[in-house]
Image (cartoon, rainbow, N blue to C red):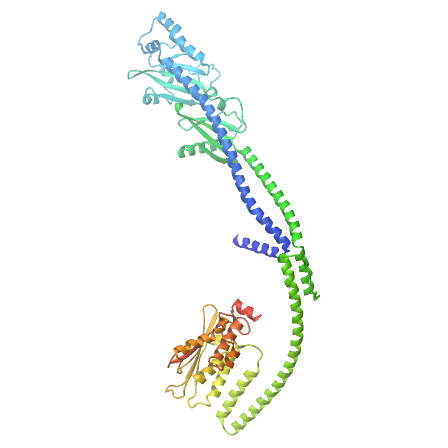
Amino acid sequence: MGRKLKSFVQSAATWLGRRSMQSRLVAAYIVILLIPSIGVSNYLFSQIRDSYINDTLKQGQYSLEMEKVNIVNQIEAMELAAQLTVSKPEILEYVSVKADLPVEELLDLYRGPLTDMINIQTNNPNIIHLRLFANNVHISEIWPIIFHERRIQKEPWYAELDRLGDQELWLFKDQDPDILHRNVTEGTDQLPKVSLVRAIQSGSTRIGVIQVEMLLKQFSPKAFASVKDEGSQMMLSDGNGTIFFDENQPFVGRDPELREAILNEFAEMNKHGIAEKRFMVDQHPYLLISAPLEQANAELLNVVSLQAVSEHISKAEKQIIAVNLILIGLLSVITYLMNAFILKNLSRLTEAMKKVRRGEMPTGLPLGGGGEVGELAHHFNKLIHTINELIAQGVKKQALTKEAELRTLHSQIDSHFLYNTLENIKMLAEMENQRTISDSLTSLGGMMRYNFKWSGEYVSLQDEIRHIQNYIAVMNIRFDEPIQLELNIPPRLMEIEVLKMSLQPIIENAVKHAWMGMEASQSGIRIDVSEKEDDGIIISLRDNGRGIEAERLNRLNEMIRSDESGNGPSTTEMINRKQTFGIGLRNVHQRIRLYYGERYGLKVYSSEGHFTEVVITLPKVLLMGGGSGHDEVVNRRR
């Protein structure tokens, strides 16, 4: 992926580099506008998304709170009905008596307290059942209020009453079964309901159980009413986490996958103690909100589809993107026209340069106005004038070159005469059995051929070393004790490139100044060549002569490098002043820097009475190519 991105960026940069300046400026303006536009758009998208989500959340929470108020009213009505029932002493006395009452007392009970209980249910039509289950087998059941407790002993929640004492127990059920087990029902047996169950205590003895029941469609009208909402649905959850909802509503009732997701998300909300959560089902976003019903130990839930919200957000995002594109397009057109007007003179200057390239030499370009383009036109006119002058100079130099070639040809004829003469003398020496003279003439001839054959500035290290060997052989004729030349050069480095006559002046310096002729040890020069880690080479030329004083050595190194700051005297000035100390070393240093760059050159090290060493730093470049030279060296060679 990284390579593809890098390749794409390089291709785009190459393509853009071939376009005109006007096109590149327009592209740059578009990018400059596009980057903040994208940032602002992303910020607006985030704000719009948060705004829609927050509005939906607030609306859902408001609906929950309104429904919660209604449910709390129903809870209070059920609690009040239960309280009014257990507050009548005649009812409690009846369910506590261990003998059958006479008919007259039963009639009085029915006309009085029992009628009041029936009126409680009648006055609150949302309550479908108000029942008292007596823990007394001696009394008679009075339908539909008083029943024997054995009718509820098989209920799963019955055992919970002993643990709760006189506390309330709230139960949610999917249906309303007929407690009398009749063949006909009241038509509510398939409807979900909520029950308030509470034990009636007489001291520490339970004498009965009061039960108040209400259908969930009256308990929570918005969750179980017939009004259907395609975008949201309310539900109830009991203390065990079981969720009750109207299965006839199309939102949740017909989507089992959504029901399963709601159960899982509600469990996560209870686990982490949060009141709202967003989730996805089949790529559709939903929002689940809960509100506690503390009195009934239950939760009121509201699941809201965010699909419509997402569509609104998407529509708003598309509108913002469209506005940005129109704005960027309009600004691009305006920018293009303005650039065309501003760069008109630059286009004229470009056409003039093309004429120069084709050989049509204009005398000048009449462009008025100031600014960078006007200044560029002024310098272009100056450039044309300079080119005309250079062409005239080139014609003159060409004539001089022809004359130099003729002189070179003449000198070659003279050099051939000199070579032939040396060969004749060498043959005479061999005929007289003068081997020393013959070998010296051979070395001298090699030196002369090396000097006269100036085919280029660059030679191999091997050729330069052979020239030094010839020079030492010729110089040894003068000395009683010949100078020993020691080479420590790896064979693979013999073909590296060096400047012609860059090592011989250093050897000549050593031969002239290193020894006084009275040394006890053998005179010697050692040449070492090694590689650097940065693809460079180091050439060390070391003699075992008398060395150089420290002060004089410092002055020598300063003089060699005095040209680097541009403040030192030129070589001609030094010769005029008869200051010849170190001129050869300085010339070699300047040539190396000129041809290879400022990173390279030479430096002199010495210890008085022991040695003098010249260290040369060069790039590693093979003479015929294939080397690993630096870019700086390559640029020098072009």
